[in-house]
Length: 299
Image (tube, rainbow, N blue to C red; front, top):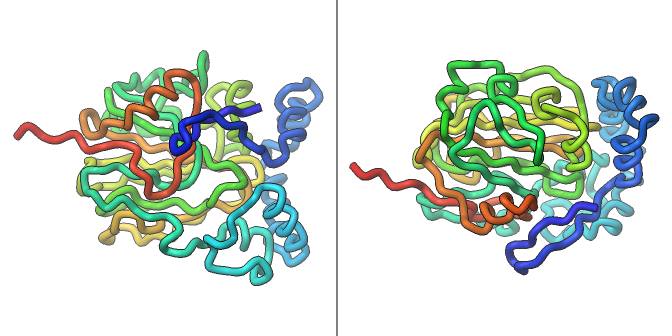
């Protein structure tokens, strides 16, 4: 059972997890963990399932998925019957007014839909995965000089469940460098997995890019793949001017994670997000929603 905080309704809710029986078995039983290491974490498993989700036969999954998880199809550009495959539905685009972007230049926005945790004044060698489990930024990105740039800075973790909108966007105007791929495994990013697999984010397939933002300094943008995520697709143009809220890319089928690192004294996260993180709860946020504010310079 995953309990998260709904900041709009100011109450806790229980997440309806896609494949929860499967996930609980995999990450809580000795046999399940054995199958995880032999089969489920491997690239070939996620790739084969990705091929199925790209095929026409997978369209049969769409109606049940919409009904089971109460997907709001009024937000989508396409109608239910217009999708060519399950992945076509999973990577669906939304109407422009479905996710209003907070235009205030001092406001930090969420890069996507999901459940967020936020941390400030970070120790690069003890980044929190869950209570009792930490990892190092150098192990996550493999670049010591770049890691040092974010010493005592801030970071946020946005977990996208399979039921969420799976396109991710830019948090500000700016210019983004070329995305770099890091090979890895395909563990689930569900909290059940995060509690069982040490340094999970450092083990999974991921991509990273440095975003030179107009208002929040240099931001390290990391996308982490997960079980059944066949691909991380980048759709932006590197080294070109980018507008706040514009699309950066999307994940194909599966739960996924976005991690953003900010330099020291660039961002202050909203107090409710800080409070819920300290209590051990994720907070549900949507693309374009304000999650923090720019630190004003004294100069």
